[in-house]
Image (cartoon, rainbow, N blue to C red):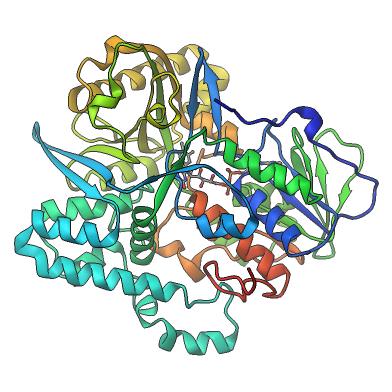
Length: 527
Ligand SMILES: Cc1cc2nc3c(=O)[nH]c(=O)nc-3n(C[C@H](O)[C@H](O)[C@H](O)COP(=O)(O)OP(=O)(O)OC[C@H]3O[C@@H](n4cnc5c(N)ncnc54)[C@H](O)[C@@H]3O)c2cc1C
């Protein structure tokens, strides 16, 4: 099976001391998308991506332990049009039947739902399972579809004229800007606890409870992920590797192991970046940062260059949760193919209120997982990649708690906590989904919030950028234009879709709407 192939010698940097047209900080999906969109639309020839890790991809990666290859990400959303626009070919497996096998545990009894792919199929399914609520379900789903369609009519950075037109172009979006997903369900009179549990699954995707998640974002995440979803036939790191290769073919430069320690500002304008260990500054006409916004603005730029209002906005921003992942390499005796697991998600959780409790635990800096309160996703990548049996168990939301401190100062405790939580997650998977699982484990690798902090540089180990709260949605998110002239920070949303859109929006902004006409979603002027 092909892994990411980017030898060190593939990575070139020809810095000659002249100013780059564009320097991008971070070679995750947002940074790579920015580089590709910029070069495709002839933003400027001299383009450089700086990445602190020895490989591109950021959170989208794969790694090897004990002869097994494990991945971070699991679901490839519908970004097919964007890939086509770039001419990027990734061999994708489409999921057309069941989108999610969903188990809800109530006092020891388990209810199972099979959420089908496709909004219409989902509506029909819910009406069959909850016939008493069929009318409300149809109205809610139709409303969601219309609301999401109206998002397409919005502009990313609206002009005063666009703002005047918005209530006419997208009335449902305007009506729901400040509405939580729970309030949207209330509006349609959905009070049946069991039905709400199923519907609220989609807000818990990002570790945010329905009573704090934005209605538009949740409906959008639900419709976009379930309508057309995929995973690569190969490993996930083949995606950023292909993006990097194309970016290099188009003349872009990448420097790996290059950690930016300073964004250099002169009289309110960005003039370059300083890389750790380098003698001089790299000069840049424009800089796009795709890293944790707190680090970028408060540490790399520094408070001296920011207004008290902007600092207050940064301080009030809630970064998203972290996660605890247990990657398992299993022996050949287990028949994963016969276990009904080949779906983008298999989710098992306790009943309604679980995500609220887990989110409050995360906000308090810890986690609230216990045998009576859990939310766990299980995915089985080897059923697609065809390699040795692998399984991933993912718990969200987890807080950083003491994980980073244990990792640095108390390795014995760090190891013991990893073992404890590894046992806990395997125990849940074994009890509800795969009886006898522990007998088949050959390799067990636990990734903690400290692991994610190390991957990304986010001190909170946040895996979904800013939390998807209603208070941080759309115009209330940190703006792409920072207070520093020619320094941009695209933060449309998280995920592979959000990351690709970050690149589209920021390049469109830098090029005065030249290729996407200022649209909030991908609608390029030319093919
Ligand atoms: C376990 C896990 C599972 C997930 N599953 C899915 C999924 O199934 N589907 C989905 O769509 N999304 C998923 N996500 C979310 C998705 O992976 C991320 O939202 C997305 O990859 C973020 O991309 P990014 O480029 O914005 O940020 P990042 O991936 O964080 O990239 C930022 C890059 O900047 C680099 N960097 C940081 N600081 C510096 C510095 N000072 N100098 C230079 N470089 C720096 C980092 O090393 C990193 O490579 C998952 C995330 C995790 C962690």
